[in-house]
Image (cartoon, rainbow, N blue to C red):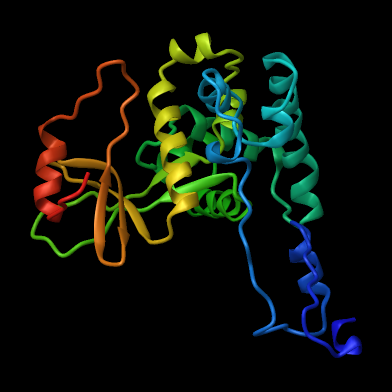
Length: 262
């Protein structure tokens, strides 16, 4: 259609079904196609009143979830989204994976939010190989449901953890999988700290483009997120506490990576 008009300034913007459209096209569209990742609402995009932060963390950024008239309606929308995504969207996109297995994997990732991934243990729990788990996680990553955060690599003589962490990207979906319906329930749940860490990481990575990862050594040096922008390294540590503080391991990691800003 664009070729027939033979003029500049024309744009065709498909949604998540673009994968199907591209596969059916007889042209590669090389050099004429741009991929843009559109996230759910970011915190900077909403009206920031006193309760907004708590509501955003609990409900996540999907518009119908965040804008629901109450927490119960938001929770029901997210549970419905999870079911629809697993049972319908996967098949529409041509992925022939069993929905129930994917649901169990998603649930297990929620319980291990922000932890070092152990593909073999996940595979044993689901009765599949670790290579199959890797395929499933890659699929969840490619559909923007999961973030696989790799270690920040740097030339150092320190032994570092090389296994990535796995995060459900939207905190609202995370809480729905864990059956957390209110902020009070969230504050008393073991996932509260990981939920806050997810919120911080997603906000920063949506705003800043650069090399990003976490840093951890077997000796205990650790930084939740390192972002390198124009050769400048910035360290971010996430703490969900009324009196947040960082330990010795954080300062050791700063020295390891020669980071001046944190």
